[in-house]
Image 1: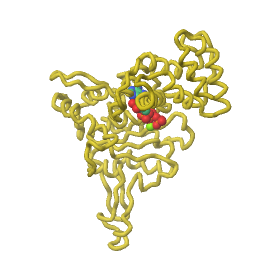
Image 2 (image 1 turned 60 degrees about the vertical axis):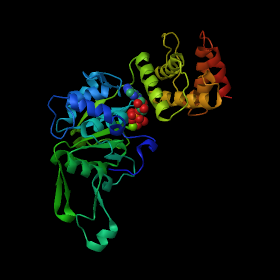
Image 3 (image 1 turned 180 degrees about the vertical axis):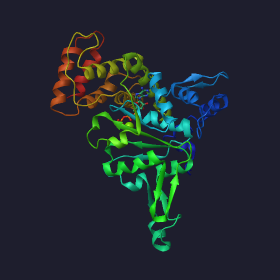
Image 4 (image 1 turned 90 degrees about the vertical axis):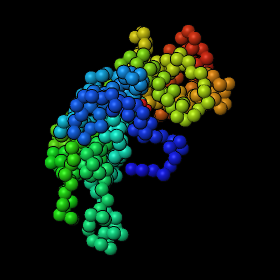
Length: 366
Ligand SMILES: Nc1ncnc2c1ncn2[C@@H]1O[C@H](COP(=O)(O)OP(=O)(O)OP(=O)(O)O)[C@@H](O)[C@H]1O
Ligand SMILES: [Mg+2]
């Protein structure tokens, strides 16, 4: 796919554009066997995802922060005839990891089907250019391939987001694709046979389970890899710090010194509310209805930095993040409001050094 927009103006470049230098350096350094149709060996794909320093000094930044084994299993799956299903609660980097895997393996993360309740079979298979269809009848040039069909023809990875939101009969269109590795086009009396290198990475949200559960026939064709929430507070602080710094650069936000202490505090608040208990294990707290994911912590801090840069004194203060925290926690004004106030009064108020944060949160909740 090509685009006429100059690269510098693009708000969010694809992973393969953004990290083109790292991918090129890895390809040059990579002397291990590559599965057919892959740009890199499984070892180099994993190094791209988890980060490393190459012998020539090139620093490959970590994209996914988490257990090496999780990434290795995901990469190894894609080298087999089974497709990969990334499963997890919201904000566990399912979409993020799938984009980076596609970029590293195929050099193209854009062959994407966004799953919704309205996703039709054409999105998974192919559609028609109706003007041509009417003028010429069914022909190869009237056929409009969907991302999966393109991936099959070109031997690349296709990504299917939110697979379980797709209606079951549309999901079933994938069974032939995955088991026979062909996509029949009965209108033309032909088929597309998948070229080596083709596979599918799907993502699905734990909480959506039951919306359109995967049929057992389809489930058998996927290896499921569960992406966990960050295990320790330190891991989560690292993820948030990295992503906030990356986003600030990408959005060209004015430089705001962001103290690790402020990030650590937001992460601690989110983790305590998620777990239903304070970090020291002493006090039980109620959990609000929202997910309070790592992704939301990243948004709260990025929003806070924008506030501090444009309206504050250029330093991230509790008042800059309080409104964001309040918005993330209090999704339901009544029940979550009670949970949040109780947490503020029983936990936040008592903590040494948290007085400013307490006052700012009280103010934001008014
Ligand atoms: N373990 C992690 N390593 C690196 N980044 C992470 C990690 N966990 C979360 N993130 C960050 O969180 C953000 C959101 O991730 P993403 O959108 O991929 O979540 P998701 O699992 O697809 O969520 P949803 O179920 O809502 O679609 C990304 O910016 C990603 O960088
Ligand atoms: Mg997602």
